[in-house]
Length: 394
Image (cartoon, rainbow, N blue to C red; front, side):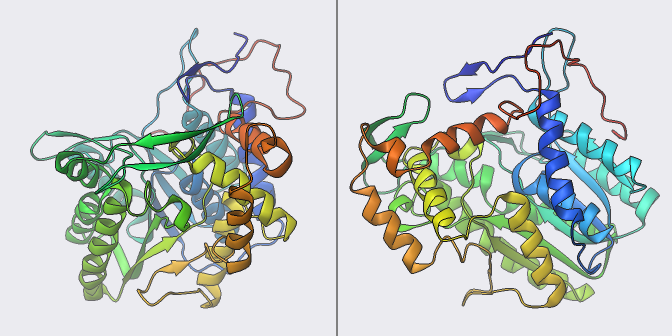
């Protein structure tokens, strides 16, 4: 079928397999230019199909020559419907990995569930014996509790008082003021249930009890802080409450890992164009300014460059750690000169000048590329196969 981008609100509901393959190939080719010393050899990535999770799997495999198990939750394609972008990303990653002689297997299902945790542990025991690094990179709008069966939904809202600020529709480039009413207690609690630390602790408890974590194993969970501009809707909002819970639980997990000489870390990464971030009011405008300022200062990094730098710093022991023990690879984003310039431009942005003083066009293009659209060298007018299998799907 001929595949075009189709939208439901701000969600793209189609994906192009050739474009997704190009995204993966470009990341792999970047990593292979200069391999990193092999710090970890057997890596479990929970949330491995898009964004930082996908880049972590790529850097682990092609930078460290590590064996990887990826846990994803994606929909395959049919003859008349495309798969999700994460499915096509995983197809492309596994084919390259297998072609080049790397171990790579994927489990597709709800990472919050007991069944997927058990399946993952069984695969580790049968194929790898033990894992020495766990990457936790889940972003989900909902969670079914594995014990109670209760469904929780995350909310993108401020806490305590309403929030009003500029935002942009990145399809029309219209700048407008948005006002979001504060979350109630139930919405805060549900967001913590979905995006907080309970599931991380459940994973680590099961991995420890099954004795599939190597001595000295590390667990790294990805998080974000961001600038003061986005604090009300992000760090001080419902999502921020969930991130605080994740950090609190990571400290508990760190104590548990001491029994095997291991450690748990939170890695604070930079803001990226993602489907999730695109749906958060204010954030698309902020990231379009951030990208412009970072490029002007020659500081810009995409997801694979960020993770490559993180892994390089881990291997060399030169990771930047803040006063709360968090790994900070958002250091370039949070530089005073970068944030100062963004604040200056923020006050000036209007619908009329947004294309001149921000990278909103690049933001929009990068959003389409998340789903495999907009890459040079791909004929988007030709028929494409949509029903493609993941080779090592367990």
